Image (cartoon, rainbow, N blue to C red; front, top):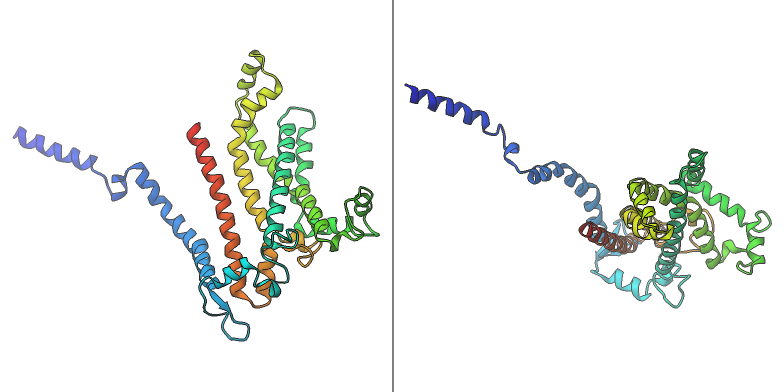
Length: 325
């Protein structure tokens, strides 16, 4: 009788310990993957499907005189003609031409990204270092630095268009006195590129400062006390404490800004215009408006590929930092 009771209690305990459903039998990693399934489905629907559709469209011919959006399948002909310059006549400006770097959409975009992101990072880092200090009125200084970032792109473009408009703004006179600008910089490709870079740095340095400041605020302050006791100078503290610990946040900020800069369009259109300063996004918009949907898709997919390559470089670098930590 006692043996039967013990078996009964054992079955009750086993039933109580047994998982109630299949999710409880999963490991923590497996359960995490299950929770990610809805997100993966959403990303696949909202991001991957349009990307695949755009790529499929880019493999077809333009159909200017047809009821269809695109024509017959031509494989990689659009990409080959873009990269070799065979489409330059219909594009209005070269897609890739190293002999004319300030007339080519790809080289203009890359030059703009390299200079603008570098300046924004340096200026933003300096602003973040200042805002990380304790001083009277720091809250108001933070608000003042963020104001340009809050300005809409259309208004930002209008501000700089007026500032460098001959006979209206003082910017042209100042730059001409320095021997930098031509008489009408808004119709000169090189001058317009400088204006667009200055406008973007003015607006977006605050964004970089905000992200870098978040990294600075996470640094343990006791490390600086130890460094002071050890006799480390300010430059040594920055080199061995501040910069290594802020680098992950800096890489995230660089990733966001690089991706955003590759898609530059609004500030160009509201200052000199895409006819003066070509960019990849300007080319996508112009070819789309002219009904060349396949060509537009090819330019868009090349842009997406460059962005993905840049993102991969940042992600690999970030992973190396994580492993090193």
